[in-house]
Image (tube, rainbow, N blue to C red; front, side):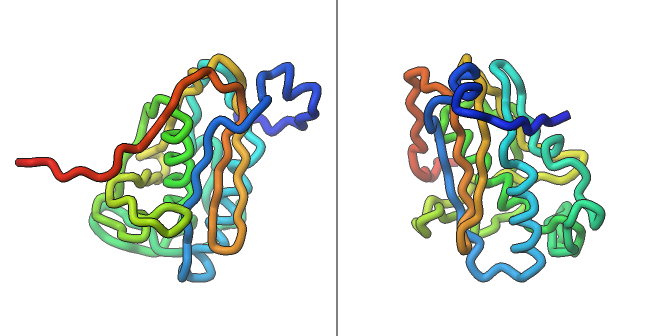
Length: 190
């Protein structure tokens, strides 16, 4: 199970949670009311989570049950090659933002799948700048899941927030000297 302990300044230093080590934002401008509600609810479930050194983080495990009993509303989801209403529509925006934060932190991605078809609103970053396709992470219980490994050597704290139409995930821990960069979109010759 996922723990959400109370963190004090003293305990955070003991755990190695001393600085921001990675972050990412996306926007959900123009989203329907239910999608916005689901995004805010998902961010709430993924905030305040500790990921121990060597631990694999699972987005689906952290989210838990996604239905009307946990505050989710019906909204459109991509299921196979169709778009249909189900509880939790919009959570892929949350997992996509989390994926980008993990990338920006330089963490090993252990499970990730893009959507079955191109979703143009995932092709921008939190500042509205085009970053191209391929940086999304779809989730759907029981699979696919988005997972990453905390190989930093210190405990990480995941903090998420929604401000206006922007989701941000910040990862706190201890920097270990790694540098991460997304090398832009490239067209490959076939």
